[in-house]
Image 1 (spheres, protein in one colour):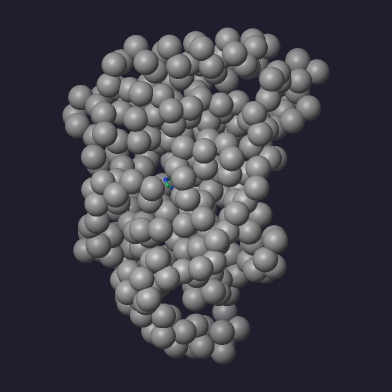
Image 2 (cartoon, helix red, strand yellow; image 1 turned 120 degrees about the vertical axis):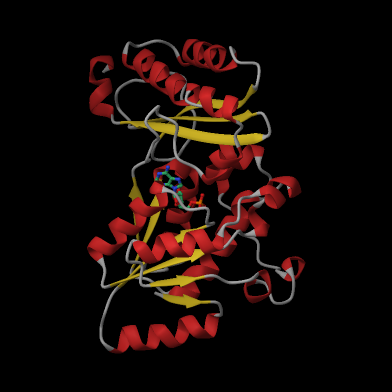
Length: 292
Ligand code: AMP
């Protein structure tokens, strides 16, 4: 596996790959890898000659200094896992490599209109500007044919998709399903920070999404659903729900009532102790056909 620390090392490898007409699948990550990340790697491997992963904890997308500081960093473990799973190259830049003049020197701002006034964008100021910046930079550096993202970060996928369209990146994006633990908890690097007790109750988040899905199919009102789901999560006092939203999949805007005409997503963010968790379920409109 090629371990590339600088942009110029990536460029050299790209020259080799492109001169032989081979395709590149790209999996950007922040490390502390788990089966969710590996599922993206596997999708990339199935459809491309080369798979390149990046591991970079991007400071510009964190709105909370302590979250950035505590983000798990286990580079050696990650490299061993990627190597074991047949990843051909990994880009592991430093902050200096990504932001040579410092983070404050960047003048470009990326705005995503209505897509970022809801959910993650509403609660994490500047988050999607940081995501847009780093993903654009990584796309320019790696120049992949395909890039793989998880449904786990549904809103992130939507904004990157829009950015790729608006700025004609010419990269095909793939949205990959959420990989879960046995009890339903969505895998996440942040799960490593949960205490044993917190880990035990963490699956309540997914459980509440399933309850909400059932209620939606049964034609309950959005208000009723939110009320029930938030009450279910909040039974444990360690949980603090930030939002619980039912939105249209196509534009992530909230709805007043499900009418069976649109694919929907139920999205939740909550703190469990100090750790912020997110999760979602996508519901295709066919499942809601009784409501038409
Ligand atoms: P992260 O390292 O958290 O920035 O995630 C890197 C990529 O992996 C993103 O596209 C995430 O959406 C995706 N990802 C994270 N967790 C999961 C999961 N449980 N299942 C599938 N994809 C995931």
